[in-house]
Image (tube, rainbow, N blue to C red; front, side, top):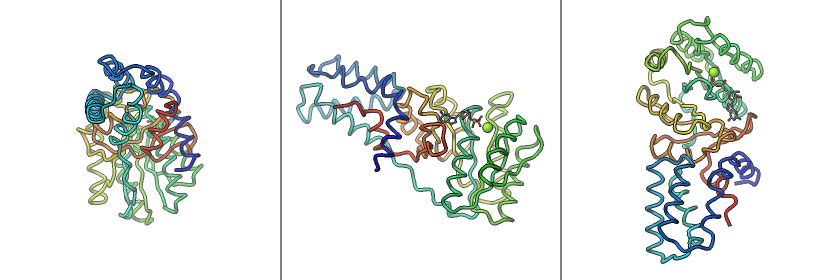
Length: 305
Ligand SMILES: Nc1nc2c(ncn2[C@@H]2O[C@H](COP(=O)(O)OP(=O)(O)O)[C@@H](O)[C@H]2O)c(=O)[nH]1
Ligand SMILES: [Mg+2]
């Protein structure tokens, strides 16, 4: 891991660190381990949006270590906390895009960062030598189509679009067809994040999913859920609804830089059981980083001594 990568995570996680995790070392201080130590740690983990399950698991594991290793000083916990956290984070699977074309559906609520992150990733895959095509299946708002078109022009990536308020399934179908005809490597399809009701939204996503499978059997090969890290528990509830509707395969955690809720990373892996593929550590394209457990832990605990 280069210093550059670690520094990106440190600065991207500054808010999370200042609000929650960075305070751990203060209250561990020079005190003895007692009931208060556990209560304080638990409260801090919950406040950091780690979720109840991951919090309890880590606290239990730490208590076990204290017994086994005979710690008495709270300050002795520091390394154990680091290790128990790291043990609960997975590196993302390598994205190989073995199918040609490989179809990726981008889903998530309105404003979560779908369009910008899809564009950033498309640009990145293109830089890696892949040919990419975009589908503008968020037909709910005309501005959404224009926004993707602007990215497409900037990146020199073709955008298949239909009419505003047109059928998103038809756009998705046409995009996959175009990708097959043009022998493209990667198809990325942007979808709507808001309809009149959540039920309508989920039904539409299921339909897009089905239609893509008709255009290319076996596809979509990936469904990436973009989650807004600033919305914490709310994003978790929404994610569960998406997961129930369609087969989500990974998470793009956007806006980690604007969030104090970086602890969500644990809840996403523990409660949703989804790998985090990329995290947004800033507004710029190069600030979208492949998820890296070691760098993440370094970022949230950087002030530890
Ligand atoms: N700071 C920051 N802003 C982001 C990130 N990802 C997206 N945004 C911003 O979030 C806003 C909504 O993004 P957009 O892609 O339009 O969301 P969509 O409605 O889900 O397609 C835009 O202003 C983006 O620039 C991120 O990782 N960090
Ligand atoms: Mg959008």
